[in-house]
Length: 374
Ligand SMILES: *Cc1c(COP(=O)(O)O)cnc(C)c1O
Image 1 (tube, rainbow, N blue to C red):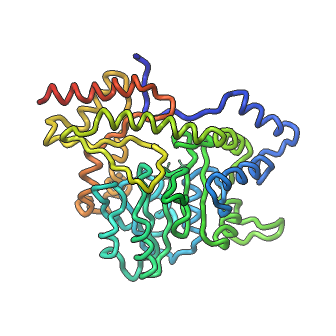
Image 2 (tube, protein in one colour):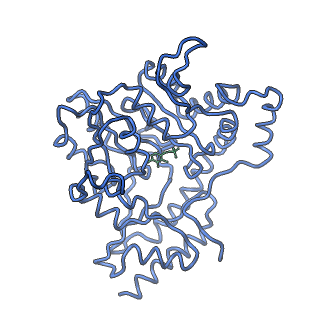
Image 3 (tube, helix red, strand yellow):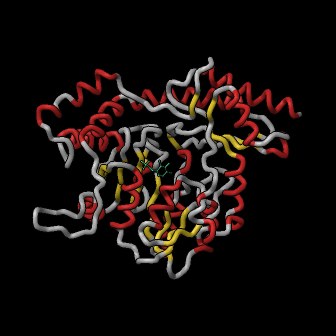
């Protein structure tokens, strides 16, 4: 058991399965621009996610960036969002000439704290951009109420929530749009890839243009777009991986439950509570270590794991409002809960083929280190 264990390992179809899928591309030599495989993948994915309001992208970030552009929000407008996320969320706002306004997170699920959103709304607020972090689902009802009251758009960064449902309905069917990521490190991957699930068909028409340079026809170019289309090879990877996704999530669930079994009820260790009404995808295994109770901090636990060749990640540390490129403009003390969690969280390795023996090993290292200090 001395192999390097990383936080994640990409799900891959059998080699032959993928080769079989891409074979046809050698007959048609049609490699991108809405080819047959893309259409097939889109059809299968629509069925899986139970929506026909879906647009495919080359990655999740461009899906988010172009969605913000397509919504045509007032230039310089403020977007209320969370600092406890991946760089992409905030960069997409700033790269659209909009201004991120950081709202603190809830200590329960690390998502945007709905009780603190209203106090941040000004005449310049144009949208709310929450993240369903680690696959924990935001309080979407409260967010929509606030958005309706102040006439704001709601765009969910749903990069962590592939396949999740609330009371049987897809998580992506809320707000004006939800963005999914199919990056190699995510629960479902197309190598790189992403999608937007939208409420209004008009947004889709905009996105179709913007993801292909705004080109509508040979002579009509009506938008200042980018290139963010998904190609046929990614679509083939998607077709293959989608066939096995339920099985993959089932296997992740077993790993997740093994961790919970071994780490629950330890004073000083905080795990996320899962809600009954939600079907989870077990994307991440976040654990918060309270150094005041444990006498050992997150960084020391992370180092102890690394000495045994186990590489957990400090997701999300640093906070976005602490990044070199943003910190001069923001005061991190205004998001104290986010700061508290970011300084103490460690996401442990989780993927479908992670042997439970490794979960034992990881949990034993954690427990041994806690004991030594006590
Ligand atoms: C992965 C991720 C993205 C971006 O997705 P890519 O497909 O890598 O571009 C955006 N937001 C969050 C929260 C993510 O984790």
